[in-house]
Amino acid sequence: MEKTLKQGMLFGLTAYGLWGVIPIYFRMLTDITKSYEILAHRVVWSALFLICILVMMNSQWGTVISVFRRPRMLLTLLLSSVLIALNWFVYIYGVETKRVVHCSLGYFITPLVNVALGVILLNEKIRFWQGIALGCGVVGMLLMASLADSFPWIALSLAATFSSYGLMRKLQPVDTLTGVTIETWILAPIAVLYLFMQGTAWQTSSRHEHWLLILSGPATVIPLFCFGQAARLLPLSTLGFLQYLSPSMQFLVAVFYFHEPMNTMQAMAFAVVWVGLLIYSFDLVLAQTGKKRIKKLSKGE
Image 1 (spheres, helix red, strand yellow):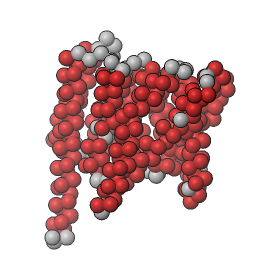
Image 2: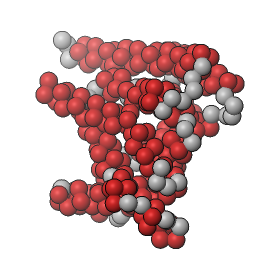
Image 3: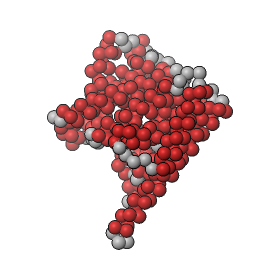
Image 4: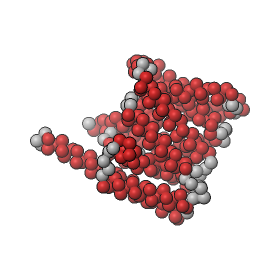
């Protein structure tokens, strides 16, 4: 059990750590081309990288092929591929337009949006502290909206698309590698067509920039795979704490590395969201502790 937890922590820290610093990488890509073309390259190179992984993991081919024989699952993955493509594009656009702070806010409020979707769409009961946490998230977003020069649509779009993506995957669960493979394969023909018709970055860039574009595949797939492994090996409460590492690092990158503006009132808005996340985490730990006690009582321990 201790070895499993250590492996899970390693995978989790790798996934969220990579996601935390990935704005630096995408900022380098935005110096090469625009967000539309970066997205197309990201899809194509991810699809090719996943083929290489499947070749090395020969046993996984059967699972991937079986999905194509199940129309309902394939339709769900079609919808989830659209959602993840939108999420990727909005994130790249946020980095391109120097709004990484908004990107980090989007992923801060994602757990709270997950709670809201569960209540609205799945009729899940909301616990008291979850309601308080959700209220903090709403207050924080309203403060950001009132203080910003424009509506924080990047943050809301990222939270909405990633939460909806998670919901689609929950309704039709497949393992991480299979799901991401099918999603990128669905998107790949459109991405290839766009690159042939509109793409200019590959023709005008240097060999060094070619490698930067190619690395968008591993940069996408590796943290997703690590996240899937962490989700399988770690308790939900531990994973819940780890998920704040990525947006926290992105926030620090935005303010201290990219020098994006941050005034006192905006910092207060973020503080309200952080309080909501702490309350959410506290509730998560209480719920997990309660389940463990019930299991022990049922076993007569």
